[in-house]
Length: 271
Image (cartoon, rainbow, N blue to C red):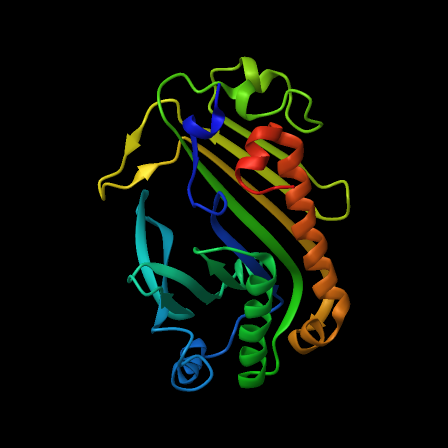
């Protein structure tokens, strides 16, 4: 079987649908709407739009023995800078979100939907957070992470998992190849960081209401590295954190080489 004629990566250069670098913050960002000023200065040539984020919270109340739920809107709980490519397609998003009572949700993240190479991606990320740090210097972080989403479409019927994924993988259990379940989630916390991989297979084509097609195969790999509390300024200034991000990126490539058949790895440019 010529796998290259049946398995189609989402992009011509690779299979990456989205790449995300995320910083987890130790406290909410005060007055996130103030960051709008950057769209007029540092981000003028990088982003097209600025949006404030509003959050909705569901509260349950006991009123005379009846449980009622009320939806409460909280305004300005974060921000988004949005950039488009020359064809008007969404290219990148820089966003911050306050988690409120759940501090694990408070974060700054850079999402790239037109990923090509690691170095331009990580260099732009550092450029962006340097601007955020210059604008607001009292930001502290306690973890950072990297997430890749790889998408493939399959032409035809009966997706042969053993032609796409390696049975010699150290990660994928044998039951994955025998099960009718189309979802595999593996989590590892034993290495001092959080490592999660999700593999989803859709045997039948699924078209959403907006005419977008759900990919036949989706691989989501997320690694999150906890830190002692440090300032954003320290994270930017010390090269060891950049080196850790580089290492996590290499770990993702190593994982894909482990779980994919060599022909598939070659198809998406993994060497």
